[in-house]
Structures are given as structure tokens and as C-alpha cells.
Amino acid sequence: MDINFETDKLLVLNYPEGAGGKFISLALGLHPEILIQDEKLAGLQMRDNADLLMGYNLAMKAFSKSINGDQHFEYGCGQLAGFRADMLIEDEKADEKNCNDFWRELTNQKKFYYFLIDHTDKNLLAKYTKRKTIRLINYDWILQDRKWQDKTLAHTTDGECITFDMQSIKDNKAFIDEIYKIFDWLGMKAKNSLGYSVQLETLRTKFLETYQIGFNEGGMNEGR
Image (tube, rainbow, N blue to C red; front, side, top):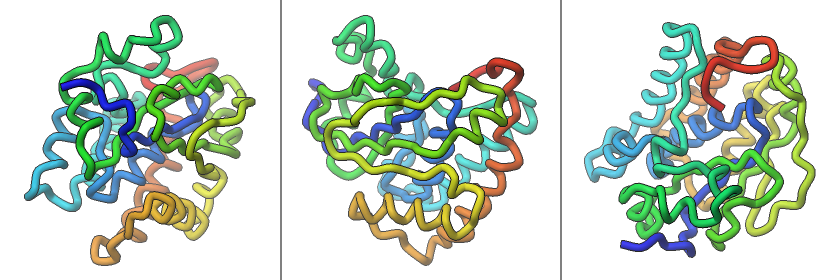
């Protein structure tokens, strides 16, 4: 199976390293049609009888791992696809050479959204012509609190794009509104029966409790 470069299910999160984008992927992942960045776990989410609370439980597991291990934990692009977008800087065919079979499957299916991360202003994933980009803004406070390089990506993102205001994380209603804005943009209905608002508030407070774990002067122990 070849990579389908015209997939419209690829969500590109665009932000500088350390700005909290992986948390946004977890929050959006409450929806059962948005996958976690892990090949095995995403495969389980795609099953017909998958637990509708799986996204929430996996997000909470990530927070627990950070707390119990006293270092930053996150799911990642390499765990999902077998490659990272930054590999395309050196080799424009790095995805074709390094991707796993699951990535090929993801690009050819029509139901589930999935994430890759672009930490640059280069639109590294432009070859995926129908990708949808979520560009983070107002993340300076996260970088500052993490003692991470304060950086703003200066570029115009091409293709279909929407912004996500990271300042909203400081307020319950504003954060929920931003998440629902993305769901609406994707044409996805958030099922009230899943208790999204309650779950989002739990994730938001957990992020605020844990977002500095694993980050030290000038950097972090691991992860992005």
C-alpha cells in the first residue's frame, strides 16, 4: 500500500518545541475519531468495539507517567508513523523511506483523524496537500515557565489552517470553547453523553499541575 498524499485526515500541529502542542492533541483526542500518537494504541482505538473513553484514559495515563516518573512523558510522531516531520528537512522522502505500514494504512482510511507535529515555519508536510493545520498562538507563558527558548514561528501557513489560543488553558470556559471550535472546524459533533466538558476540565487542570515536570534550565529531560 502506498502513502496517500491526498489524505484529508492528517492534522498538523504547528508550534515551536516546548509550547504544549502534545497536550492539545490529547484534549482533542477525547473524540473517538481522533487518534493517539502511538501505533498499537491507535490501532485499538480504530476497532469497532473500542472504548469511547479510551482517549481520556490514555491522556490521564500520560499525566500519571509524568508525575510518577518525575519527567516529561508524551506520545510521539515516531511512535505513530515511524518518522517525524523534521526528518524531511534533510531528506524530502524521509516519510516514504521510514514510515511504518500503519502510516500507509492511516493515510488511506477515511474515518479517523491523526496527528503529526511541525515545529518549524517551513510547512514541512506540504506534500500532504489536503492536510489540516492547527497553529498554536499565545504560548509564550508555557515556554517561559518551562525555561525553554522563547520562540515565535514567523510564517504564513499554507493550506487549510486554524489557530488555537494557548492562553485559553488558563480559563475553563475559554479552553472548552477553543476545543469545540476545532471540533466544529472539522465537522465533528462532540457527544454530550461522553461528558466532554467535565473531561476537558480535568485534563486542563492536570496540564497546569504537570506542565513544568521534566523541564529544567534551558531544556527538558525528554520529549517535545
